[in-house]
Length: 222
Length: 251
Image (cartoon, rainbow over all chains, first blue to last red):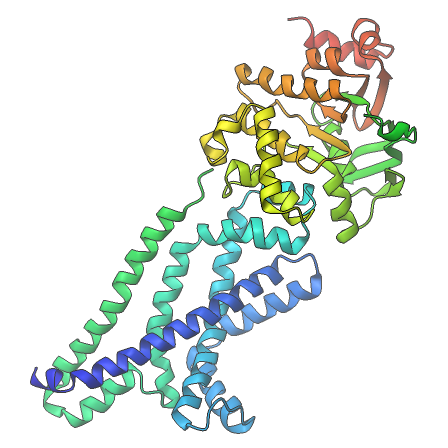
């Protein structure tokens, strides 16, 4: 137990990185996923095709491969650089991987939400002269998003846990820090393990509760 | 309200055809709607009335023939079509008020986003229209909090807010409880008397008698008879129309 208290600042720092990874990736995934969902319902076959291909390829690739591709493929081979600091650079590369992967799931959740919006809503919007994008932005997406808050909460919880894969390219988030602490505190493996497991629960459980509450509060009454 | 005495027809349908799969829902439809005219379309279910109504603002595409609105052929999807739709109001059977917007927002959305009118001005005009249809006091509520009849009156106000050249009514009272039908018809009769060009698909024979300039009877995708309301209800020319009327007017 003592090891947990001694290393508390280190653990806290690691989870802070987990939170930053989650927030940055979650925000980017929401934006990209919404754009993809818009593409998948667009009247243009080309856009629909690109959206479908993206979702099917990315969703069916193991996240570890996506992250390693971002770290090695983008980072080392293509020399994509966000910062002169190596650790900041890999942090951003892992955010790209996490958000690209999560966006596929966000897209599918939002697309399911679009299907819950009655066709008459879009028809009424077209009938007053809104263009396709205005219709999507003002009428369809606001209702679709509010219908899928709970599933998006599940996607966010999955993302929180998925940030541990960033360890594969050396981003020092919670799980990598846990492994490091195992090595320096060989006598306290079990307490450290439970400490980290508890840390993840502290992040995920309230997220689930918050999104369930939000989904009830923001539901569109028909 | 025949605009500046303009006598050119507002809507012209020429040889319009439409299929749903194997079903031939519109067969060689030729129809002209004049400015200021109230045209009532009646007929049995599945006869193509709603499809005809929806084709005029291209919520349904057609397979053959042409539809001209205000001298312009209907454009394909895009900005030109959006502009045309903004000039043709539409009132649906199921109201289709925007569920996540307040009553006032439902009425001001089009003027603000499509016409670019300032919010304050759109709201002033929106309240005027809501008062006119008797819903002013409910402006800040959401659609689900209103009765069907109230929702439909809001839908009419939403259409009016765009200052349309015409309004299409697709069975506006069919989804309403019986005691709410009259409040909606009253608003529609008021519009008809003011000279609004209207095409009304309905089963309300009383409305047809009272407000229509012309009745079109449709069955099996064809226009079977065009007549004045008086002639149609007392002395229909075609057997198909007589048969239909005998079934609905016996009670």
